[in-house]
Amino acid sequence: MDLGEAKHAFVTGGASGIGLGIVDAMAARGIAVTIADIDAATLEQVVGERGGAAATVRGVVLDTRDRAGWARAKAEAEAALGPVDVLVNNAGIAPNGRAFADMDPESFDRILAINLTGVANGVFAFAADMRGRGRGHIVNTSSQAGLVASVPGVGAYAVAKFGVTALTEALRQELAPHGVGVSLLCPGYVATNLAENTRKVGGEIRDHAGAMPPSAVSAADVGAMVLAGIAADEPVIVTHAGAWRSVEPRFATIRAACERRDAA
Image (tube, rainbow, N blue to C red):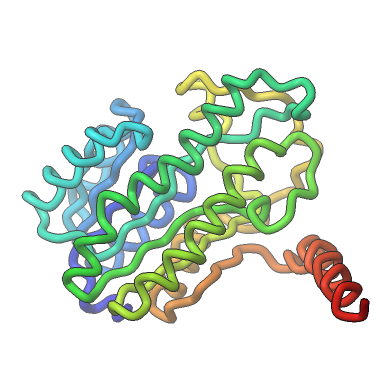
């Protein structure tokens, strides 16, 4: 999408972390932004701090699990700033650190409801309008854990993020003939307040920080990558160098299985 034509972006989970990095990158390009976030206090603070930004930045409180809330947030946003040209479905919570055999099913349900169904709800709210206008771009935040489930304790999170990956790949095929771009954002570890935000919605956090490498990529870096990815209509946006090393064994296993069948 030509970012010069983008007038209004809607970013969920936009009051902190990667979402805020994307918001600031959009605003710096002169794109008006609606920040949607469940944390009303932080949202108010962030919007207030950006009151002097060149682009209009406004906030709306939204729990992405709430479909009626999505309809309300969309109506408010577009009444204030016009049709949404860029949707970034970024809101999410952290892994619970538990193996499936030890997991509270409610924890599993919460992770899927926010990390997967919340993304789908954004698509349900905006995709048809973008298709009808024949323009726009949707970015769905998955994870490197949405490409390979290789880290202990992220099983439920990986299920959700693999779902986002599948949703996004299918959506890209559906919308491409109508002039709407779709990108899958697959961040590696970025230092944010994700754990704190997870606790705020009742999510479970266990100490699996030992599996996380130091982050050489900031939320602002990701914001710049997302804008570049939108401009280039990239199918997948990967944030960290070396990601293929962890992803390749999974695809090699799938290829080997296919080749065995072909040779049978």
